[in-house]
Length: 297
Image (cartoon, rainbow, N blue to C red):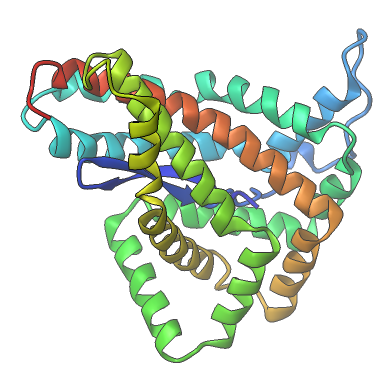
């Protein structure tokens, strides 16, 4: 139930697009029992959070997100400083999205948000059956969407589902509403864009005298565009990911998402990925500013 964010190009303005945090499928090494309390005095909650990241295949997701980030970096370069950057910029973006840098940022927030929640229920749902299958499908779809041709086909499929008022699309909308996926992603996108601008200012790519009020006004002006982008991307992604699922399986996943454990897990996932994308976006702004400093932007 990864329904997290990813920057998407919108002219010269970064727009954070949902990258559905599909709760990744069960890793074979963890097809056992819920984690035992940690040893050496470490909080059991931290051990549970760490092992949940494995059962949800979050390390795999971060690797895919690095590939997405490199592609986004190319768009950013073309929009903001065409003809500059080159291989150096690509290396910078790869490092900004490096999974070994981002996983600790995610895990710290994720573990804190899970304090006092029903982690056993989360584990039970995703360990096998519908939950494990959902995660595998979500990860596979996320990887497939790295191919522009697949993304175009997914968009076309969504248009056809809209035109025919497909019952499956209604079920996907219900799933998205159960997890509050659209609004959570919109808020994350706004926060990430604000972080990007702050990075630009600190890097000299925007005037230091740019006020917080100006930044906020510009970011909030993007809200409707982000919501539309988010909704279209999310529905196309979920339709692709869950196409092999039966109606009963999707309903079971929706029911879990609407319950206490599902809502708590989604909150923790969004909090963790918001922290990740705040860092990523700030560093992208800082890096882009190196090439923009002195230009008329």
